[in-house]
Image 1: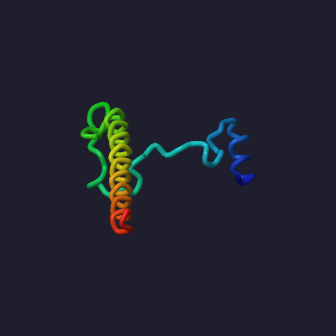
Image 2: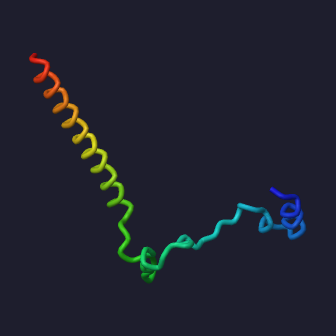
Image 3: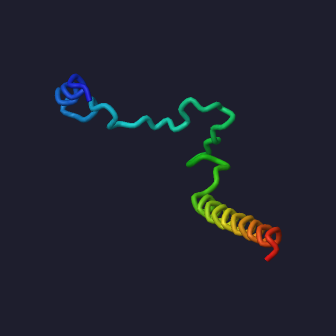
Length: 85
């Protein structure tokens, strides 16, 4: 942190001059307008809820685990079949 930013914050008597302390609330940033969520009256419209994202995360883990189990089981079956056990 530069000393000029610290001096500016101390001179104002606030933390406004401290770099990195205040965040930019524009969460869209440089995103294309096509990928930005539409903003409704109180919140973004057509954006998945936290609950649905949590459920999707759990289902993804379950599906990935099931796929790995099936691939390993088939690999084991193929190995033992080719080895003649």
